[in-house]
Image (cartoon, rainbow, N blue to C red):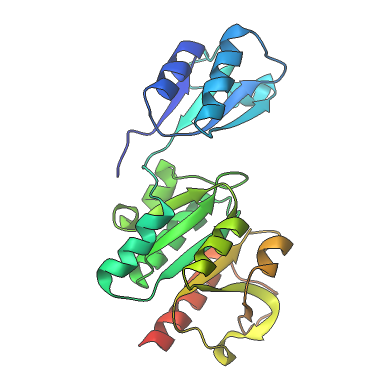
Length: 245
């Protein structure tokens, strides 16, 4: 669902945004600030599981559009997040085995938008992203998705590994992309499945990889050793589509 995306600046404005129930992705606070109003903001943020990041003044100045941030700036999400249960319900409503794409630390908004677009076209029932150390649903993501964000639910979770464990109880199994895995064409990718795509630089984290049932590698014939994260997601997603046909 579309929200008005905004950079919210100033102590009162950020506090009011939190208390109003507006979807806040992240709050930046001037490093070292611990006075009454700042403590109130961080307390309200904690209640709502909103990430608070302490940064230098130079970082706040980069983000600020007004120059009147008073040591605190919040990012409001461009879109409301779904719940993981909404994604599973999406599959049930269509009478299909769940097909979910999980992203382990994607940081580039263009990659996230492109993956949401691929997820929609490949018939995935939703996308799951982590709360920390990853890009959120910004206006840039929405634009890169070419409208797919309106139709593909995206859930944000605290811990990808724990979410995978919960989904395994729902009958899903998981495959992640990694150069050291089995060639994807040799794997059975049918049934209830979660496709895990890792960070652009570091790939899938070791803990998340341990929770995967299979590790799939994409055949490479060129002179470099990896694909862009969104391209890798597309290649593997469509191998899943092919096997489901």
